[in-house]
Image 1 (tube, rainbow, N blue to C red):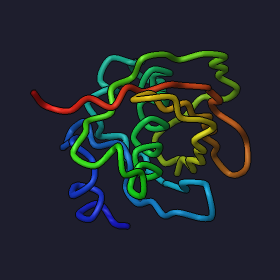
Image 2: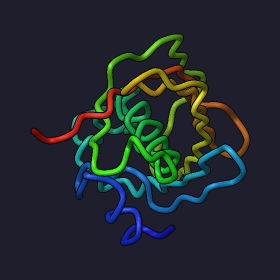
Image 3: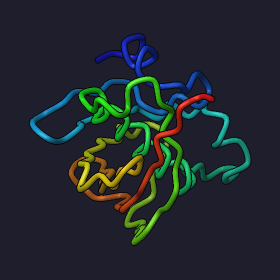
Image 4: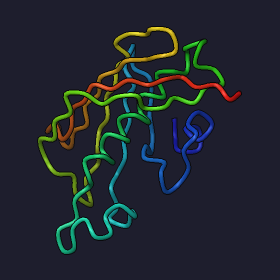
Length: 140
């Protein structure tokens, strides 16, 4: 899926759309985003030494997880909201010019909740790893 196809699936829009492309590979979502250096979240983080904030890396993983919900009947028409982030680890900074590879898997479902694990890496080096959960919220 390219960015335009992702917009049909994700509720996010620029500047908060944080996945450039994604595809399903078996039970995993594989996504990518290239950091250009012009992103709003790099302004002031840090002057002269721009680094993608960790919370933004977590959001990249969450958006990539949404690709996994395409075939989930309960998720149709729902917006997934973060309910938890656990065991988050940051191993390497992400900088302008980096292409971040995202791999996520849904580990279980319980009612409206989905539990997932995700890894972000650059050139095969892990940047961020996290377990997360989401609630599927339908508009009332």
